[in-house]
Image (cartoon, rainbow, N blue to C red; front, side, top):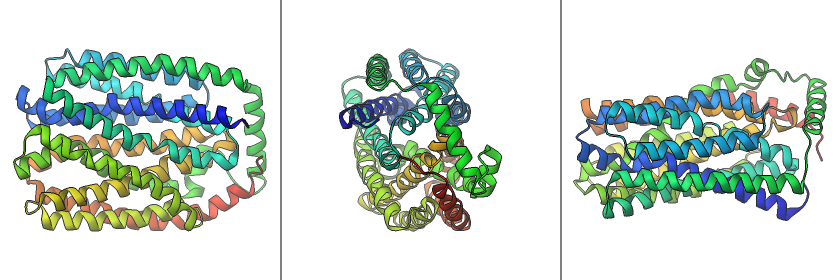
Amino acid sequence: MKKEPTIRFLFFLCWCAYFCAYIGRLNYSAALTDMIQSEGFGKGEAGLIGTAFFFAYGTGQFVSGFLGDRLPAKWLVFMGLFCSGICNLMMSQSKSIGFMIGIWCVNGLVQALIWSPMLRLVTDYCRAEVRSKLCAALNSAVPVGTMAAYGITAIVLGISGWRSVFLLGGVCILMMSLIWFWGITRVQQAMPIQEKQVQVSHQSGKQQTAAVGIDTKLSGILIQSGLILLLASLFVQGALKDGVTTWIPVYIQETYGVSPILAVAGTMLIPLCNLFGVWLAAVACRRMERNEIAVSAGFFAICSAALMVLWLSSGKSMAASMGMLALSTTTMMTVNTMLTAVLPSCFGRVGKASSMSGLLNSAVYSGGAVSAYGIGSMAGYFGWTATILIWAVMAAVSVLICGIAARKWGTYRRKLAGGRREN
């Protein structure tokens, strides 16, 4: 696709779809404090809802990645948005914890249909020189969507209750599903790419990479590139990005005694800072010879340091605590952008962008699944101080893992680039 207006329209459409998906995903996290107080749920019990979502989303990402390379992305994304809207509407009427867990589990499965197929659209439709830029910029929908979810929730909680939060989210996503279907149809009419053309392009890319000793099978990619080591770090990144974000309002409310509405409103600082993390990813990647894993190692180190400061200052200064939480989650947003948006786009030429994105995202959200329940349970049993120390140690271990994987990925990436002569 060479027409700039059509490229911008495709990007804007994808960005809005992912933005709305986050509203229908994080509204649960933002409403968690009010749900615990009004419904009488325990922290561990309420955390099971988030665990169900992240576990289903992580599993769904693995499947969605492979589906995205084989089925029309237009329909996959539409089904993901539409069904997520229905789940949100059903959540607004739920009364039992078991029913909520089931609905939010289904919401995780259908939301998994959105990101990886969308990434495939960008890599198939756009030229090589703009792919990684668009994929990185597309990830900015995450912090903006997070900020909107918390902001809208704070307003709705002040007017009504937590049920209205899910009602509004459901309506928003259902409307976006219709806009998506209309918009992507326009894009395809403007640039009628044929599946045969895509397959020929992918086959050509595989032949070029095979000539320089690159294995394009999934197992071969994981071993040759060092990405198999990276899965453990992505697990930690998911725990520190999504799991921590889920529990920030509860931590602030319990540690500093503020109201649930104020805790949610204060948490809006976090995604605002996370938006800066997306920009950092693009800048850092250019200055470190485009080794995404090496960049990630550095940001894991900053995250670990920020969490150590949080551990030392917890309970003493709300401003310091919020600042360190913002810094740690911002670094994790940078890592997320590098490893689940920019890095998978490298495989677009050989038709593996969606598959690799799905696999890497699966590890991320497995970490989010475990931490959504685990953080609540640890905080309830050991207290927040010990829980924060565990976060810092996890980030430090990830520095070592990324450091080992970075050299192997650097060699592999240079070979991959040498075998991809794209226009």
